[in-house]
Amino acid sequence: MSPSPLSLPASGSPAAHDRRFFLGMAILIMITVVIGFGLNAARYHFNVSTLPVHVHVHAAIFASWVILYVVQNALVVADNIALHRRLGIFGACLAAVMTGYGLFTTIACLQRGAVPPFFPPSVFLLVDGLAVLVFLGLVTAAIALRGSPAWHKRLMLGATILVISPAFGRILPMPLLGALAPWAVFGCMILYVAFGMAYDLRHSKRVHPAYLVVILVLTALQLAIGVLAFSPPVLRLTQSLIGG
Image (cartoon, rainbow, N blue to C red; front, side, top):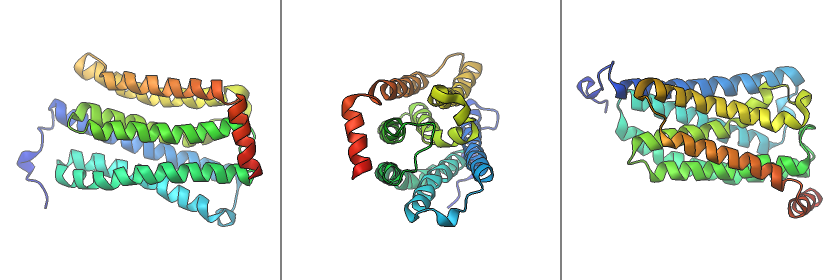
């Protein structure tokens, strides 16, 4: 049942501005994914029908998250909070499935040698494996703080920016960037977070602390990958997965 138009925030109110901004970011994220994977397909002219089934399932699951994120923000703009909350239950389950299947796909790619040439296998393992675990952590925190919409929507934005990092990697000229390739992707993620910070500064004269948490989490993830990727335990784990 649709909400009464009278329940909608006034179009010029801060709440209405916030809702439109986050919907705009959701649409930008979707466009980024389409451009990234579209460029990848055009650049390499690969036949998607030759890819393993698990790759198609992985793509469908992760694309579902991006679509759901757009729909959820559109529902908030329409003030259909009841449906937004019901779909949130599905979103929580989807995030858990994404995490498990993301780890499975990462291991499967290692085992069949489908690792981008600009990533050593141990770096690839951590870039994909740790990222999806951190994504789940951010989503869990956002759900726990759903009673505080300001925290909830910013943490969800941060989680979604993180999960589309492969799209940034397909837009950037990764083979030409060498060791800087992971940092270039990191820079793109921080740029998208900065859009939210700039919006906050413009409309409320302060940056919400949720964005600082997101930046700290993304930075810690990036540093952890750099520190751990070539450590003996991770190298042994990577070799065991490849050999297994």
